[in-house]
Length: 148
Image (cartoon, rainbow, N blue to C red; front, side, top):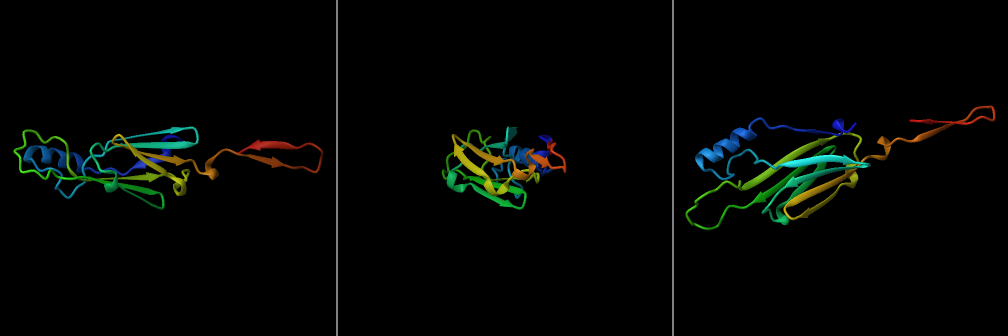
């Protein structure tokens, strides 16, 4: 159940864009989104996702949920200075990532926080996906309980 909880929508051009940015010095101005590293894990009845977004203004972060698709967008603005760059390895521009969540997660109750450059999502497991007991009655005195 842990592996099926979330599927990632992959972007085969992401690595090509990163290499192009490095080779030609373009800093996040390409049409494809930049990389947004992420960790995801399940702890009990909560699914956790953390995105690394250092240097991103919290006001630029946009989090949308449509059905079972979570979209995270953020922007690290271009430098306003005309100074000569010695190194420009940190991508700038718009970052975007989509996650396709399984039906066993409760997308109505996602909690999000941003601290020290990390966007954290906490997504509870849906009540319908949690194990529960079903009582069985019979015409006799004996009653049983079955785990579902």
